[in-house]
Length: 531
Ligand code: HEM
Image (spheres, rainbow, N blue to C red):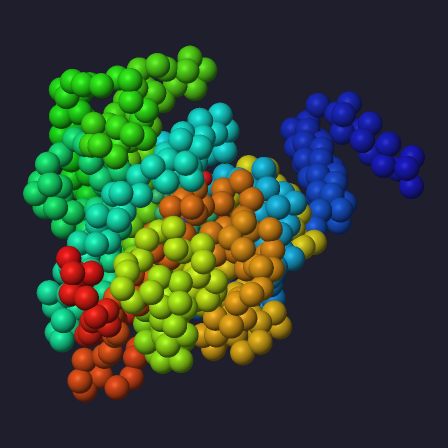
């Protein structure tokens, strides 16, 4: 046989006619293609397959079947297709992870590989090209920002030193609710303003005067709400990068407009701060923040001027950090407070138990101080249970592998967008008894679960390198606010609202679908405790 083939080849190689040459060319192409096919086939055998997933349509993949309530929709898909599955989102591959063991593989075992983000077009328009902590790729720049944020701005020592700011704002909120006794108040809205004022006071409290800072508060609220809404929206520009320049849904345009509003405020603050003379350079940064002489902005400006030559903090970074604090710190905390209050009001026995604990620890002739919160294990259990049922970042911030790797026996290609559904894991009936029941008792006197992300059955702040940078701040703000609201007032629904609605609305930050409106009644005998 081989001799026949070689004779045939000889004849066409030696032949001069065009037909022989054409046949020879076709023969070479055929042989090469066959070789490539066999080679790639044998290679495929050793590469694990992609995860399973629902069948999609040509070109669009699974895009058309996405439900706006992504967290619960993804949980439903996991029940059908298993704890790891793929979705074709246009040209992008989405990977859904919905079990503790797979979450561990992604966030712990392959921590470094998955410590990247797939920056959505909306975030690029928002966060100074993605140069903030949330969106910066894993590397020296992210490390530098994270160090500034976690070790300097949001460390326990700095937070201790700026307690006065939190206290002032929380006491003002109590006074406001007292002025509205017997009337319905929007708890989430008020708590958003409280948290926002605490954060902006920390950022540039020493830079702006009181009234101006209040009007900034309402502007920020509007902007932050819109931003988090757009950040959570599926965007065609992300799924078809070649169409990104058309911004078909107008999301990037809207984000850029919102970012400009932020930027103008930041510019004003920075200019004012640069014009203020430092009066007393001998005080520590923390002392200066409390006395209003220095704030985080001042601290960041100094850091920028000192300039580490390897990874310097630029003006872009500085503004992006301010943005992270305002966007990342506000509605995450205030939505948690709102969910907690709604769940507590829905369970009078929980409200009673929490108030009893507060009366025992604080007393009814006193006001709550932040130092009390360490002595309130039941209220801690309430906060943990709230974050179990309503983790406000239900899909974390999506992670993205920098290299193709295997998870759960499947290939996860480089650049996929990985959603870890902490919301679904924390409601999994194989892990939690009566998972849909709000029952703080499961956390009471049980230190098994904390916020460190070491147990992948419970990780509302994420886990691994990209774990939330503001846990200490969130814990203080949520606990101190809840303790104060429950100690100072009894809460009931307005007449006619017999049933509390606890439904959620998906966004990158989860919120209550319908705001919690409730009527406060004072419960402390001394009216001076409300001023
Ligand atoms: C109850 C309140 C909060 C919750 C539940 C929460 C939760 C989270 C989660 C789940 C992540 C993503 C983790 C991941 O991708 O694996 C995150 C990231 C982050 N959070 Fe929070 N957060 C809260 C409050 C705050 C506060 C108060 C701040 C700052 C003032 C903050 C700043 C950040 C930052 C900067 C990141 C990005 C970290 C990085 O990519 O390296 N968060 N948070």
